[in-house]
Length: 73
Image 1 (cartoon, one colour):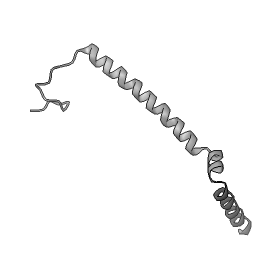
Image 2 (cartoon, one colour; image 1 turned 45 degrees about the vertical axis):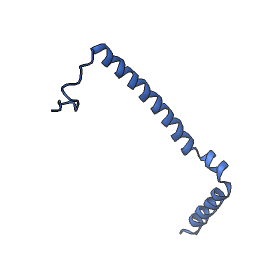
Image 3 (cartoon, helix red, strand yellow; image 1 turned 90 degrees about the vertical axis):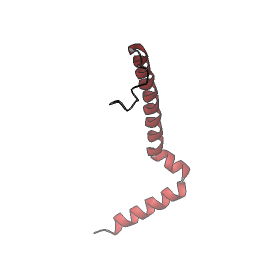
Image 4 (tube, rainbow, N blue to C red; image 1 turned 60 degrees about the vertical axis):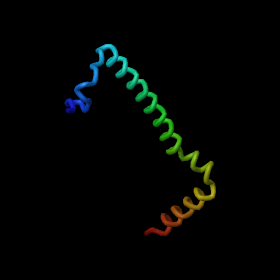
């Protein structure tokens, strides 16, 4: 039969110190992951990178937007 935390009752209980160590390790991994994700989002959202990677598409998009804005009344 399973305990309320999803582990079987026969599983040996962990000590408080090992649980704290596990929580701290998980917290450090999460902080590293969040930092990496922030960096990736910053690079993906940087318009300068888009222009460097796709200059012709950006010029074409700017032309279309300018044409559309200029033709509006």
